[in-house]
Image 1 (cartoon, rainbow, N blue to C red):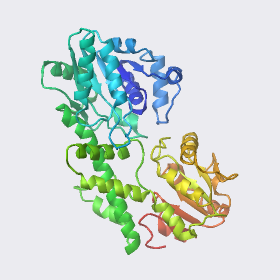
Image 2 (image 1 turned 60 degrees about the vertical axis):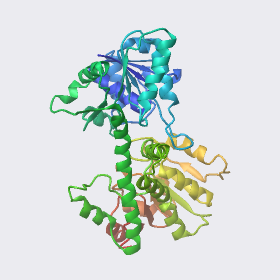
Image 3 (image 1 turned 90 degrees about the horizontal axis):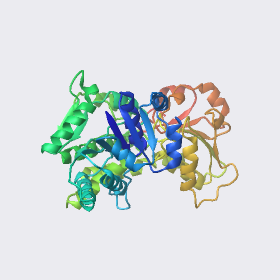
Image 4 (image 1 turned 90 degrees about the vertical axis):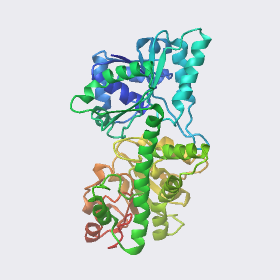
Length: 455
């Protein structure tokens, strides 16, 4: 099939490359000429395991192309995916300007029946707005209203997006219950047929329910994280081990183990903005989502838990102190710094007079840019913030190591060598990747999240 993807951000690029790898001819539209040139040459603007090689394979096979030509994009395919960004607006609502602009460009160029697929994460009712934009543009041109709008939210985890796309748990499709809606469903079934050979993965529902499903899924996962983080903070006070608690409750099949790891709070491009957007949607309808309001509040507090532990151990004046920070991206296997807990931590360390040597396997360039924005009002002293390419290099003469992202490379270091490099054998483990008893035996002062029972 011919498929058009509007937007080559994280979702659009993964969707386009994976659909091309299934044998489709994919046309990717983006308004940034430099990005289009990079992608056309096989370059990758984001880090996602396996995606770059998949892109190069499909460029060589002639199954994917990138362009700034909106007319060519719309004429290329009957199925038009909108996969543009929906960042949080100032009031917490999702900013739909890019989604509606994409719909407008489709309406201005379409000549025949189109299935317009909302792949972007959007609030309930967005399909109606897209539909109105398309109708307006077609009326202006004197064209008949021959289209269908489908909601097809993505469920991709950064760091495992290719696997998630190729082996989906479910494919949610929201379609209208009319003739053109059924035509759209038939096309979408044809497109997604390769995923349904073993068993049916498609969940077909009305459009608004599909839009709601995406927000509900992310809100549930965020809730589990904040729930465990709040319990972890109490575990520190009462002397319990939150990891033992996780195993104890996770063994209940009604609960399960996933997303019950305590840590320094969630970040990234999805959970923070989607929780905010769902809360805002409720407010617009005269309702309050009190649980989600608490989830957001707990996460904001949790992002300060590690720095609070540092201040409690060293005092609020960190002049003369140096810290190694391992892990900058909000999670492993991505270079995404959006809402990363490391950003607030490093800024707080620096503002308190401390020095930081920071390492991340892939996110150093993105971290430099993000922290430059965070510290635009702050006068950095010489060598107060260093980015190093080797994790052990960051440890020279530091007063403590702070782990903020659970990259595999950090899980089993040479603790003897690590200790010999540090001025003080102190570890703040913001992701609970080490066993407290092992750290104690190795001679480290260990401060985890809800795991200080044997310190």
